Length: 318
Image (cartoon, rainbow, N blue to C red):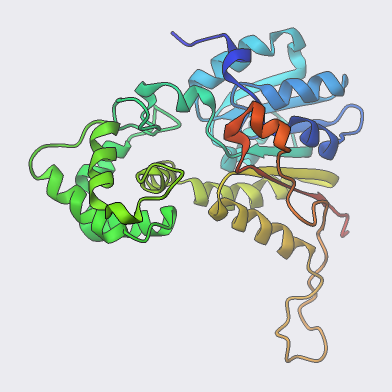
């Protein structure tokens, strides 16, 4: 059964800042591409009484909670089980051509982190799953037990930025030769033992980066982000705002690069004296530096500590 005590388990990050940055006009249509348990959505619906929100999420458990939480707002909110990268098709199915705002919160929810059966965390033993959408095929266990040393090393290095990636990959392959790796605590112990003790990070578990890497790979998170930003931009109306909350440097790099490119007036090589590219400025960046949580918010919600919020407004280039 899905837990429905959502106030106790869900604290939306940078909520006031999101509400202020999006600042939709009356009657606007907003897409929340990672609606989760509906915290940001509820705040927006409450702050702007005439807007409508289309909420998308891959996690059916989270959607069940959102559905109950947002029921008082009636037809002002429409929930869809899907991937935000497919927002163009989703909107077309709903008969929506353009939207006035787009929000992504790329962090894991408490629903995912605190439930051992979801397999995202090593804090308690659970099946090695990590799928945001449990109707999808491959789990983290499939990846860990089937990938080669080279594949595992590449994933852990690229998505976890882990210096001991190859050593960890070899340890995983050696361990699975004795029996399939099925649980989060099994994997955490393998990684813990693979990293030399003197190189264990002081404030995080040694397996943190490996778990991040596997989760990103299982859910194709970075590809989803790259494609989702382009897709949402294509349906965002002029004047509409795109806001993205990221939680690690790989995500933030993609968001920053996307906004920066859309804000450029020229992409010609620097040695060309006259612009030949005809590039137009497509967005105005609203956050010169990312907005981060206050000390007070981090004290209240420690999981917010690595959050970064960036936003940009689409310009009319017609």
